[in-house]
Every structure is written in C-alpha cells, then in structure tokens.
Image (cartoon, rainbow, N blue to C red; front, top):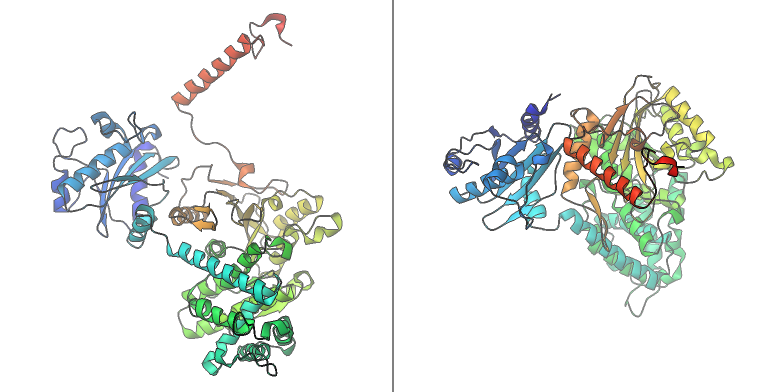
Length: 639
C-alpha cells in the first residue's frame, strides 16, 4: 500500500489522520513553535529545525521523527541514556525527537511534549513515544496507533501512563473485589451459604430492591419469627419478577424455585446477636448501600453479576470450572460486538448464556446505536435471546436482564442441543455469541458435547449470512479427534470461516485455559479461495496484577484499535507475526501459529551475526574433538 521505505512518512501521516490528529510536515503555523525551532537544527548549526511532523493536541505538543531503517530507532550512551550527540540526533529517530522536544520546551510556553521516534516501514516498524517535560524524560511503551494521543484520549493517557494515576476501570475492579470479599465473609460467617447460593442471594436482593420505588423498605426486615425476613424478601423479589413480565408461568416458577432457600432457611432470617439483626437484613443493607446504589446498570456493558460470580468462586478456592461455568471478561464480550459489527437491527442469541454477559454487552451496544425509543423498546423485547442449561445460572441471567430493563427477558432454561436449529432460525437470529462449556467431550461417546459441536449447532441456528463468534480453547481449532476433524469439514462445507484470533493466555485468569475467538458467517459455504484472517493477539495490553487479577493497561486501547483496523481491512500493511491471511483446509490447524511465516527481510548485520555464531559453534565442535558438523575436513572421525 505504501510502497518502499520512502513512504514511511506517509504511513505515519495516515495513522495521525486516522486518530483525528492534524499534523504539519516539517513545519508549523503556530508562531511560538516556529520561534522555538528557528535555531533548532539537529546538526546544531543554528539553522531552522524541521521535525518530520508536529501537532498540538489539547495543549500537548506531538513532535515526530521518522527513519526508514529499524536500526536507526535509538542510540544510547554508555550509561544507557538517550544520546544527544550531533550524530545521534541526526541519525536516530528517538534521539532527534527528544532533541526537538527539549528545544520546544526551552523556547515556548508548551511544557508537555510527546516525542515520537519511529523507525522502519509500513509493515515492520517501531513507534516509540517519550514524554518530555522541563524536569524529566519518561520512556513509554511502543504503540501501533496514535489513538491514545487523540483529543478524546490524550488527557487520560497523560494521567494514567505518565502520572501513574490508577484508571477508573482498575479502581472499579478493585472496589468490586473488596465488596465481594466482604460479602463472601458475611455469607460464610452468618449464612452458611454454598458457592452456588452466594450469587443467587445477590440476585434475589437486587431484584427485591427494585421494589423500593413501590414502597418496599429495608426497615420492614425486623427479624420477626412469624413473618420472617426471608418471607418478606421473597415476596418482594416475586413482585419484581412479575412486574418485569417474566412469562409464561412455568418460567416464573422456574426462577422462583432457585430462590426458595431464602424463604425457607431459618438461619438467614433469625436475629443474630452479633449483627443485631438477621443475616438477610445485613446482606440486604450492604448490597443496597455498597452495590445497588453505586452501580449504574443501564449505563454500562459490564456484566456485574457475572463479575461477582467469578469473584465468589475465586474466594471459595475454585476456578469456575468446578461449577461448570467460566465467566467471559467484559472486555471480551465488548470485543465480540466489534468483530461482528453489531447493529441496532440485529437479533442476538447466546445458547450458553451463563450470567448473561454477551447479552448485556450486545444489548448495550444496540441500544446506543438505536435512534428512537421505539427501536430501543423493540430491541429489549424482540432482539435478545438466550438459553442456559443450569437452573441457577438461568436465574442469575434472568435477574441480570431484568435489572437492565429488558422488557421480556427472552431467556429459556434448557438444553441447547435439544432445541431444533430450524425453530431457532424462526426468531430471525442474525448474530450468535457463545462461550460453550469446555472439555465436556473427554470420551468418544461424549463427542457430541465438544466445543466444535456447540459451534456447528449455533451456526445452523442463525439465519444465512448471519455472524457467529465463539470463544473456545485453542485446542478446539486444531481438531484432534476424528469427530472434530469431520465437524471442521462440515463447517467449511456449509459456513464460512472469517478468522481466528489467538488471545492472551491469562484472559480467563486463574482457569488455565488458553482461548481463541473464531468468527464465522453462517449458511454460506466457505469459498476455496477465501482468505481467512489468523491473528496473534496474545499481547492485548491486559496484564496480571499481583493480588488483583487481570487488569487493563494504557496499551490496551492502542492494541484493540490496531486489531480492529487489521480485522476490518482498513490496514493492509501488517506483519505476519501479527496477522496472516490465507486459504484454509479442514485438516489445517485454524490458528495463527500454524500459518505464520517470518516475512522480515534479514539485514546484513543479521547475516554476519549468524555466520559468527556458526563459526563459534564449529570451533567448539573441533576443540572438543567432535569434528566438523558437515563432515568437511573431518576425515574418518565423523560417523
């Protein structure tokens, strides 16, 4: 797209433009920056300084230097600092950008400068930012885009990446962890609740609290032995379910049955001397004050009930798999919406909906895209469907959707495989999302429960031309068993594989499953010449933080933006180490690692280093009496 090395500047310009940044090439029309650069030649001759690009975004200066050779990224002195000799500033990108940044700070009122040293070509390059202030130079992580430096993001990026402030998302995660730990301890100490029951108690109380607007008060929970707190709370959650139009009656009863223990277990309603109230009232007060009032459920795509569930399991010493459920992280459920380009008129379906994470994210995205209240009402009532096998998870998912204002809660409790695909198509499903149960097909007679079996049935349940995204273990895409290899062939015969994205191994932190996302178009046979995308997204900007878990870094937004650019075809100059486009066969391993090839052209120094390494190895072989590797000059000593 950008041709040879001479067009690297054009590539950088396009990246800036994509981020909405207006940059000038080797010039600026801002007077004081002109003055600051008037005698700022990198050759230090007192002549005009001309950075490759210069821009001002929300009061921050961006100054950019490009080099066509990746070896010319940065030169450091013996102490490891970025060298500022004349040769360094003229020949190396980072050094030159730093030189210009310091001149700007010295000669203008601008005191916050992001200096970028970029080296390489459109396909293979490094974009290295620095933050330069009057007192400091801070080296930042490399980037693939300028998204973090756009007008909408630069101030946040400065606060989090430069100043080290904790992002709100991480504070929120920490807060949820703290609240979950405190709840877990209360449940354990005063309720005798099982792992399965803990998230149900949270769900029941959240539903009952919905009735506050109709006169319910926590003051009514008095520890009465006749009309117990459990009865009172159960009555309120039943009202909440009926008010949400949970129908038919059998479904309402199915949900209520999961909450019966709240009504019937005496220890939850009895007055506790230490608490000075019943455990249920204590739980309800905590959830009301610390969770219900603090969480704006309708304004976020995050599955808070799912997050509570995952933390309850973790604090109980489990990993989710012991209870049959692994909750999909919110950043993945939101990514699914991007990968299928979810629209307001889509109909989404999750056949293994768990706590409802995919449905929550999908509904949030569609509601934001809708233009009218009529469209929003239709989305809630007619465009969201889910199936869940487990009664308790079904009740939590139903609660989740009700709390989000889902008017009909089109969820059913049942076995996806016992649901006819042609009947599901009558719901006009255009998008399928799924995180199926893992590792259920451990024996030959369990083959129908494999992740690929779930995937195939979902593809058959979606209208032709619909989009399907699933998150499964990477082993699923290999097809180790005969049955799975046959299913892969069947999928290509009837559906199109768009691509597979290999994910961060810690995506399901603490579970030990290495996942990938596979995306398909349903009902359209895979063309022989179709180029599917295989992406290595292990470096996604999310890292494991000690005692916290998986947290987002400031790099995550940049990495996600780059991924979607490549996925959507808006960027064609990508290294094969990140993405490969290729035709596929059923017998292939549908993973980036299978198709990857090294497309970097070796440089002269790499060749010299390889020869030197080989000669060192050969000398050691001879020195230790093992002769020549290839039998040259070794006589009869070789065998």
